[in-house]
Image 1 (cartoon, rainbow, N blue to C red):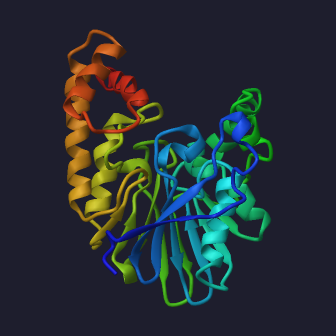
Image 2 (image 1 turned 90 degrees about the vertical axis):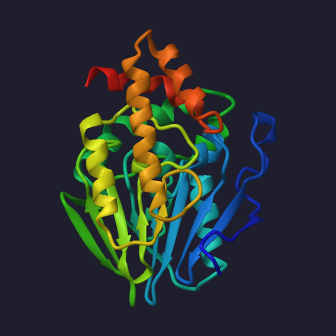
Amino acid sequence: MSFNDSRAFRITGGFSGHNAAGMTDASLRETRLTQKAFVLTLGGEDIRCAYGANCTVVLGRDAVLVVDPLIAPAHAKLVEAAVAAKTGRSIREVVLTHHHTDHALGAGTLARQGARVHAQRACASRMAAEHPGLIAERRANPALAPLFADAFACEPGHVFEYGVTLDLGGVTALVIHTGHGHTPGDAIVYVPEESLAICGDLVSTGYHVNYEDADPSGLDRGLAALSSLSASRFVPGHGPAGGPELVSAQARYHAAAREAAAGGGGADAVASRLVVSFPSHRLAIVAPLAERLAFR
């Protein structure tokens, strides 16, 4: 199956019973990348669908790897169900590409089921510092409280500095810290046997970039690390998977964001320029953060 083939399916029990609080039943969309790897996403651009973040699953002979298990326990349970529908092998390894909750907050649910959670040191530190407060804020919001009622801050079982190699049985996942780019604890995952690179938010396809925790000088370094891999398939943090052209497109977006920031006039003006340049991109709510690029 082509890595761009996709299908939608519904798994009940995610948000069921929460409609009164503004929730809807959750439907994961699966996109097959290879015979051993696929992407799961809720799509959209709302917090209740993890802002459209991607979760990637890699099936090994002995174990399953999940990269970025979305924003809430309910989402992680949907991921578990999707994996169980395909294999009897357990989710043994979880890798977090960075600390932002849309990618990381579902990890605790999988850890309680026996998975080992891997995070770069700075990622783990940010999780510990930020996640408890964010969970409390969301529980205080009646529209979000049901989704985060059982959320908790996860302490990764394995904290690494530069990287780690995971043997899934016939498939190897190389986890690589690329330095401070999108966040201080960025990690990418390279699966050489599948010619697959999982980018985290170093790459977003059709989504505006959240520069909140970015080091502008490190963004290009992260893209260079991705380009150096012998990969033919790339999974962005948000948006459809594709080939190496996704990395080039992200570099062009960063260049446009820097140009928009250089024009000054405040965050709203910067955002307006960026949205005009990328009118079809989702998550325009984060576009004002491109103003930060003017100060670096």
